[in-house]
Length: 288
Image (cartoon, rainbow, N blue to C red; front, side):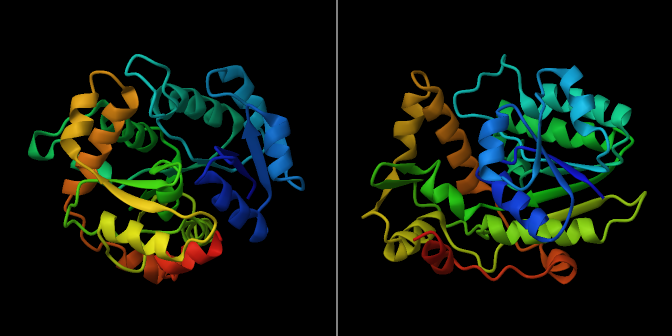
């Protein structure tokens, strides 16, 4: 089973790719920037492919049985832009069928379920829901993963210099997951696939914890920099939405994370793919 990977150099794609390589899967990394991807994965096959260039995808996917997709919507992206998770996905699905790919593995989201709750409507979540629908309607086998919050976001998208930003002080407790634990679960899922059988897994970490407590626990252990947690008042982000796409994105994702009533749904995932063991403290120590 050769796996073609799109998004291998990203924050969440890299640990999955590493896990697949370490598990012995033949991997082909499909990237727009081949030198960058080759530098990250010097022992892996890397070829050019661009979701905005459909012709490049057929060649890139030739010989692959599975395509793993780690896509995202950028904070600066606009509703009228080209979107990898819908426009690019359509190109990818057509190329996959031509190239002989039989299964699509896709990183989705659990919090996108908040779309439509409490009057919430966000074009980003509409895209993510459309992506799942496109995959399921493609006629290809699929493995779709619906993760809770990733611990890595506290040190990337939530970090601004020495500050880790949290929107509000919601009592909601997501089940934070470390990306390398998720990567191992992807490996186990693909090791157990059978032709004609779809897979869907909710991905949750070992314990529920509020956004604010998660950030505080992280900074207590993190040693690379002296970080401070700041709870941003949601009203400030809401006011900034008219002037900044990042503020608009931050308000929407913060609203969804703070209000989506996440419950534990990963029992079957743990039974079949293994229980994650990385706590927030262990994650912080691993990146020190």
